[in-house]
Amino acid sequence: MTAQELARQLELTDVGKLVFMFEGAHLGSEDMAENEVDGIAYLLTDRQILPFGYPFLLSPLPFSTRLHDDLYTLIQTEYLNKRNPIYITEKGSQWVSTILQQHGYNLDTLNSLAQNIKELLTEYRRHAFELIYTAMTF
Picture 1 (cartoon, rainbow, N blue to C red):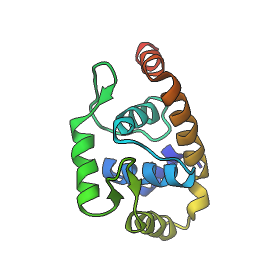
Picture 2 (tube, rainbow, N blue to C red):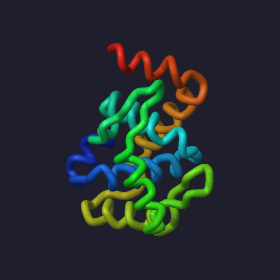
Picture 3 (cartoon, rainbow, N blue to C red):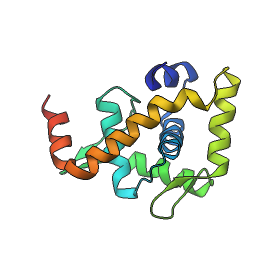
Picture 4 (cartoon, rainbow, N blue to C red):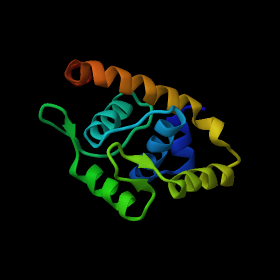
């Protein structure tokens, strides 16, 4: 099952998708700096891996005020920790596990998301501007 199908089946809001995104990064043993979050969320949306509904300003890299509002809410409610890099807390991971279990899934369901995030972060760190420009023009 793809992350997109899972998000639709679980009826995740953008806030829930952010928590899942950070859990995917954690499962892929990746850290995500605050300045990478918008770009990764944008690329996950563009590639239909985990589509977010955030409006992104492209100047030159993606930025979403709503995404950051949600990010800070998740930090204040302790689902994420705002050390740089930002990472998912035990509370956030437990929430993901609970949601998955309620629908008959386990964390292995997120392996493809974890792999996608790992690959996107690698690409993003090497060629952020080129990657975003390509996504915008096709």
